[in-house]
Amino acid sequence: MKNVLVTGGTGNLGKQVVDYLQRKNYSVCVLSTKESTFRRKDFLFVRGDLSTNTGLDKATSQADIIIHCASDPRNFEQVDLVGTRNLLQSINRAITQHIIYISIVGVNKSTYPYYRAKFAAEELIANSGIPYTILRTTQFHNFILSILKSFINSQLNGVVSIPSGMRFQSVDIREVAGMLVDNLEHPAGLLPDFGGPQILTFEDMVQSYLNVTKTNVKIEVTDIAGEQFDLFRSGVNLSPNNSFGNITWQSFLEQYTSSVTG
Image 1 (tube, rainbow, N blue to C red):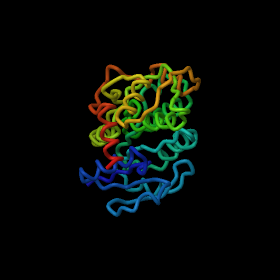
Image 2: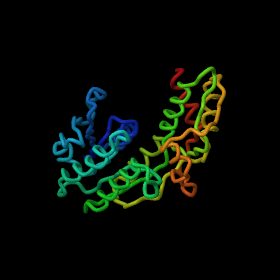
Image 3: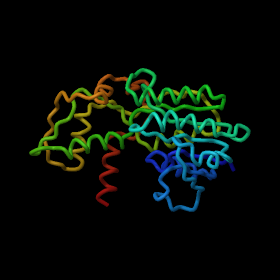
Image 4: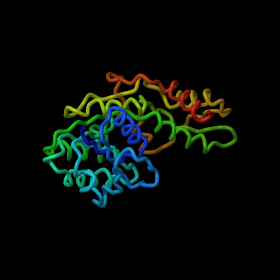
């Protein structure tokens, strides 16, 4: 039985990856700073921090394969860049035969700082000499939902103002986790982009959410400025020729609403 280390294993994607690994009977180790979120006994938990290089030697000591999910858009210099460098330096190359990295569609085309950091992390891994696989995906449905909720929570007098021109090809996080685990055994370098099944405007996505949740507010599309909004207006976050995901935004919303309402 191979030992698999999942960095960021307490995050939204990491949790799904851990579940998939356990279904396939891999021995799992989770590296995370958030010990309190895990009380399970069916895998090894190592409390550590990529950015400060703590716990990494212990976490990587028996890892045949590493799935590197840890990331922080608010602290990418330390987590995504310094952290990835620290992780690579801690790896026992006599044991670890494969590192898998989750990245984002468009990181090689954008000047957005977080994307530049993700691309730099890709290059660190590709140049490390360790056999690797890199998977770039479009935005997760969950991520779009979090953005959407932030605007709806800021509504005034029953009107929600949203940025104009943004488009997404969102993908379900469970399909991404499955894709990572399916590519566990054989290093493949840079995989084809993995995109969701549809390209939708943010306005349409918000309207779908309002319909599914029966939320009675009016949408107002405005020219809201912002570097991240400009990124999602540019189209570099899309991969129309790689719409491999199957779970649509509508299906995700219906499942989400059902789980919330019980």
